[in-house]
Image (cartoon, rainbow, N blue to C red):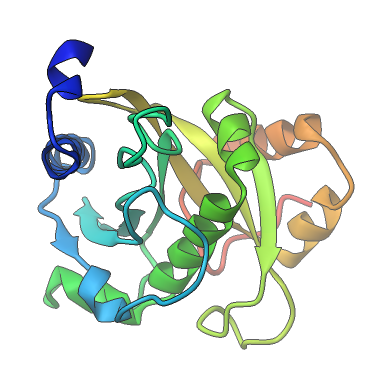
Length: 223
């Protein structure tokens, strides 16, 4: 699809084409049907600015449950801003969702995967410079409180990194798919104050251990 073609479209059409292409790409990458979790969040009157609005999807990748952001890569309404929004979408994939395979996909809204993905999504929407680093290939770590995970006390850490096959082509260009990997408390403490080299080292350790980008609630700490 040419840039000249996009120039002649209304914003509603640009948004629709981006969404359709993104959903098709995500369906292929995860080999899954997709279910919208957006309406379950209710209206948002405040919070960080997304290109068109905050949204999420649920999927299953084999035996794993997934929650994926759906809109960080929407086109901005302003023509001078990127047609691929913030240039990425984020996802968490885990066999430990606590939601049975006999449940519909939108039941994943009641799992810890949803608030984790929403927290990371909103953080990135509010800090575009972090998105630029992730798209360039730099892994990042974040920490926050999420009551749904563990016992609700203390800080939760996550490692954000590109996955090897994690790109998709939208009408406005290529976007990156960024994995959210839950960290242990010791791993989170280890990464505080350290740079990209330590985050890459930890990611390499996760790959060597066999878990890779998967978020596991009870895996052994690498630190």
